[in-house]
Image (tube, rainbow, N blue to C red; front, top):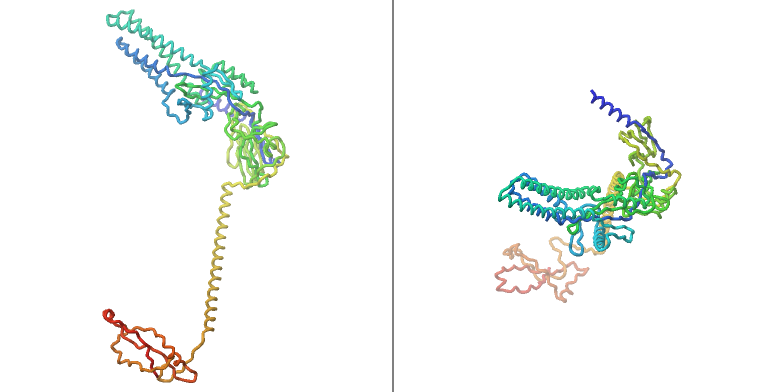
Length: 601
């Protein structure tokens, strides 16, 4: 029963928490020039980093482990197998951690320095330029007094405290191992000759010291391994960052106009990278080097106005009275503030659009043509923007009655639920936080500098449909044009043929002849010899008959063979039919030339 009462009480507190301070407010954006800007907090620009290097030489760990194993193997004569097994397991753990810290070189990112060694990035956002700079700084620090200042006023220091702790530990272990080894050799001789209780106590004591040294070494190696693992999530281990370094980082940040309230806040500003160089693990603590000026971090959201919208390429900006930057990359959030690298911002302080509008002045901007369809977008945890002229139903449990709204609208809600077009937007707050502030831009004007078309998916589909319709229309027009041209050409050809045929017929003379019954019409000369009767040529086969072209008559005969208009006698020249010889006869005889014979009729 008590459990049920506790559950009911917890549910009541949860419901009460969800309804306390619930609030909703609706802003009409009809007079907005086309841009909604929300103030999210402060912003800073990072120009570089102060660096603190922690170098740890791991080359002495593996020899120590091998030496400890040698000593353990010499203890088998004392019949303490359980202790030997336990110590060997601890040594195995140390070796595994060491292999994870100093793996075989198989990394993809790295840099070869001048002597052929490899710098490997274990964790951290470092590019090749950073690696070159780090390599140069490490070489310089090893030659100078463990501190330097770069041209960009970056303070570079090296801290060897972790290395010193490891060196002291290794020295202690080595020194004690010599004593332990000598004692075990002495105990071994006594054990062979005969043991007593005091000798056994001494063996146990030295075994305890050996086990303690192994625990110290394992603890130190594990701390280094854990520090590397924590650095992969950008968390700095307390074993790496000392209190002196925290105080130094606090002074640097306060000199850069950052109000520091605790060491936890200092750690939020710090970054950590880990590299492997020359068998050394190098922890790099990065303290930001910031611009002196402070910016307002603003959110930018365009609003459709008369079928046009501001062409906003980046949704966030850093702005103050002197400079305006658009945020082009990822920034680091620290509480209600952000910190952006100088490589992730774009300076637009001298343009005619954002630098004017964000300072409360009218500007000339690039616009895009869009369709005024209904759009509902959540632009932050507490703000929803609605654009378009369609009527939209809104319901909520924020203390506002259900209603329909139309036109461009901005809705602020807190610790309640808003339902728009059957889509729920929920905000639950358990702690008080700073709310974004809308920057008033009403009354300003945005003049069109250039106007382009916004090719959304729907717009692309419409353009594609229009293009297909135009292509279909052009194809039909082409077919009609091709048919018309073909018809015209065909008509021209027919007319040309008819014209040439008629012209040729009119230019050719017509010949007339009269034929008496029983006579044939013969022309061109008198006949002086009768043709051979058909009966005398019966030996000729029709398939062997060949028409021999008529040879021209002598000039004298041509003159006497002229036809006169007063004579009814017509002369012609014909060739006497001959028999075609066989191919065998052609080889033996040569056919004499055929001469024309004149036959009189």
